[in-house]
Image 1: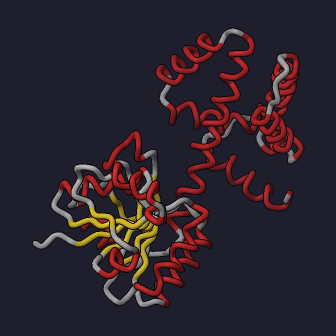
Image 2: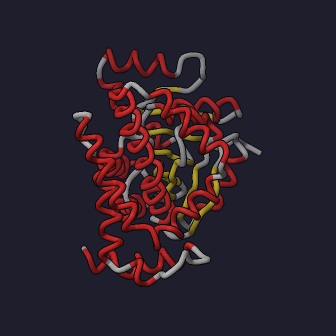
Length: 296
């Protein structure tokens, strides 16, 4: 079977890692990046693809010679790049948008691509390519998502079909980021406070030990279920936590938000609704979901 021709728009970390793997598996790969407009930028790009066989080409040539065009640019440039690419798209070209944008923006970009004659598939990268390499999990959505997942997985990547509906993959990633990005900031707030209090390593070891000894699915499920009966107590505990951070001279962004969350749940009457810990986290989620919207 003849290997597909693949083009990348944007040669940052994602494209650098994925293009190397695709080329290693026999794929003809071309890339375009706006950095190539200056001599200094061109040299930076050449260094990124040194000894790979990946070719730097103008945008028109990258799109015109490719069956699959992967957009891997900074989030804020995703729409602009789709508009730049649209004059060169045609029937038979599949435009794969791998940028971290909202579901609504994915749908708008899809309209631009399809109006130009191309086919559109959205992709959501679930992890750091720099750490996970070409096997980082990527979910795709769109009518041609299954085909794209099959093709690129056979070429060394890790694509999974998620939905036929454009926007679903992005929705999954955006909501997943509530956890991943939020946890990142919580950890940083903890460690900064630990450094200020001169117990940073003790706290780090304690958290690592706790997470190693207790499976996350069990711990998280218990946190959710006990939220129903312990929100008042935890609110008052967080008041003390924030007082402690203030005593250390630190701004408590994440901890303040946690305090506010517990207070909101308590004021909603969650403890009156649950006189004991429920047997399912779904009951707690349902209670909150039905009421949080009315608070906005």
